Amino acid sequence: MDTSTKTLVIRFSSIGDIVLSSPMLRVLRARFPTGQIDYVTRTEYAELVKSNQNLNHTYEFDVDRGFEGLRSLKKRIRDEGYDLIVDIHDSLRSKYLRSLRGPKRVVVNKRVLERSVLVNFKKNTFGITNDGRGLELHIPDEVLFGVSGRIARLQLNRFEKVVGLCPGARHVTKRWPADGFARVGAAFAQKLDAKVLLFGGPADEPVCNQIAWDINNQVGAERATSLCGQLKLLETGAAMEYCDVIITNDTGLMHIATAMHKKVVAVFGSTVREFGFFPYDPAAVVLERQGLDCRPCSHIGRSDCPEKHFKCMTEIDPDQVFSRARDLLGQGV
Image (cartoon, rainbow, N blue to C red; front, side, top):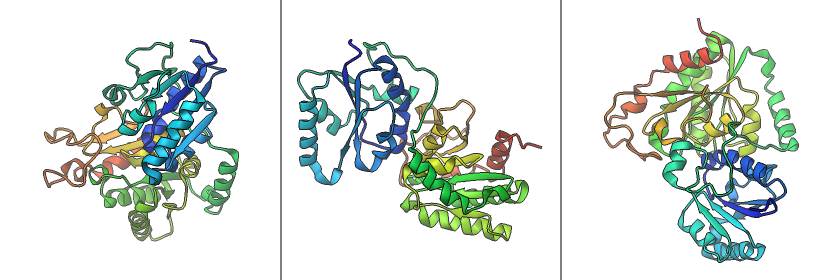
């Protein structure tokens, strides 16, 4: 295949899956250095790829426009005349977009995506292999500069360590209890003279604010600050750059932290690392409640525990989480 080929990658959502596609975009660019590589995703996630230096253009799909917006997008794709369409979503919407005459189509095997993270095509017809360089997030300088100004006001140089907490998740069974995050944050503040930053989207604001209050109450000083709901996705990645370690649930922010090459401790509940969505870093720590016959109960999470005991999360000890994070920082005793 000529290196001048025009390639379209389709992945509508969500945060983690889009970040996980970054190695594939990098190796595609290495394979087709002078080719055109474009990406389709939903508007709310577009910032994750718009500044990716391996892409030429990002199409944004506004779900509020419904089928009319999808049909308009398909016309633009048809008019562009792609040689290759790589569908790493394989949803009804992506099937509709890729149903064009002419382009060669490669469709992800979703089971393989879950097992190997980096997309492994059914037939490797264009000679790309994983380069082993992990995830990446391309953040424009203006975003980095803007975040640096906000972070400067926190005077992080007053503290020995900076710890990031990501207590949110879309599904309830992927959320470690807020009390656990508060206890870990307080332990870092008291024992390692740390500042604690909390990250999340608008829906996570109540729990982040409560955790920050609990930490400050336990420590007796303003040691925790919630940035939840105040930062966009790339701004969150830029702010994580100031953290020494990130403690997170199995969620999209876990993958953003990994893409920022941060030390990560991830708490897994109803999901398991075998699904392939564990942090894309062999040095990362994943904590799970082993020995439960009911795990896993879902590959994406559930609205409640089907067994009504939620042992997969409630029996993960905050002291263990703190100890593993401390060891990851080389602060073990």
